[in-house]
Image 1 (tube, helix red, strand yellow):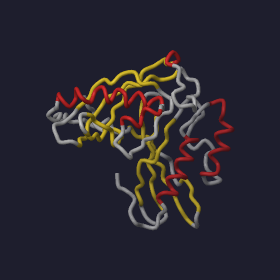
Image 2 (cartoon, helix red, strand yellow; image 1 turned 90 degrees about the horizontal axis):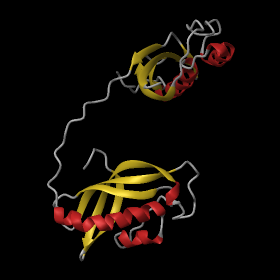
Image 3 (cartoon, one colour; image 1 turned 135 degrees about the horizontal axis):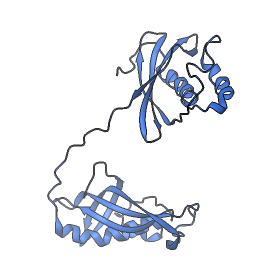
Image 4 (cartoon, rainbow, N blue to C red; image 1 turned 120 degrees about the horizontal axis):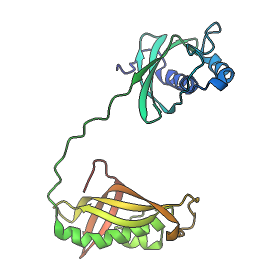
Length: 249
C-alpha cells in the first residue's frame, strides 16, 4: 500500500477524520437507524443516502480502529485505510476522502478488505548459555522481581549502585521466574527472563507499595524481559529492565 508522500494532502488529519467516520459506519444495529444516520451526516454530502449504502438489516460491530495507511492521489484526494477488529477477525476499511479549504468529506463508498495474516516468524538460534552465571543469577532475580512487583524498599538491594527503577507498587505479585537465558560474556551482560505475575481478582490495585494480598490473586500472566546485569564481587545486580522483544527461553 502506498504511503503518504510529501504532497499537500493532509494525511494525518484525513486519517483522524476517516477514523471517526468509520467508528460510526462500521457499527450497524437495525434498531438504531436514526441515530446512525444523524451521526454519519457530518461526514457526507447533504444529498447522500443517510445510511450510506446499508439497507438497515443485519448487525456489525467494530473495535480497535487504527489508521493503517494513506494513499495520496493528489492535493485534494486520498484513500485512508484503517485496521479494525470485528469479533475474532481483523479487517481493513478503505475510505476515499476529499479535502478542500480546511474541510473533509467522504467522497465515495468505502471498501472492506481482509487484513493481512500474521507474519511467519523465523526461528532464531539461542545464544550459548552460561549455566554457572544462570545459577548465580536466579536467586538474585527472584528477589529482584518480587521487590519489583510489590514496590518494597528491598528493590534497591538488587540494583547497581546509583541506579533506581520504578516498581509495580503492589499492582501484581511475583509468582515464578520461569526461565532465564544468560549468554556467555563478561561482567556486564544482557540477559532474558520469562516471569509469571499474579493478576489481581479485579479490584483496583492499591497505591500502597507491597499492599497486594496474595490471596486476592486469581490469574497468572507470563511475560518476557531483557535485563542488563552487572557482576560486582560475587553477586549480580540489575542495571536496567525492558521488554524482551522476540520469544525467549
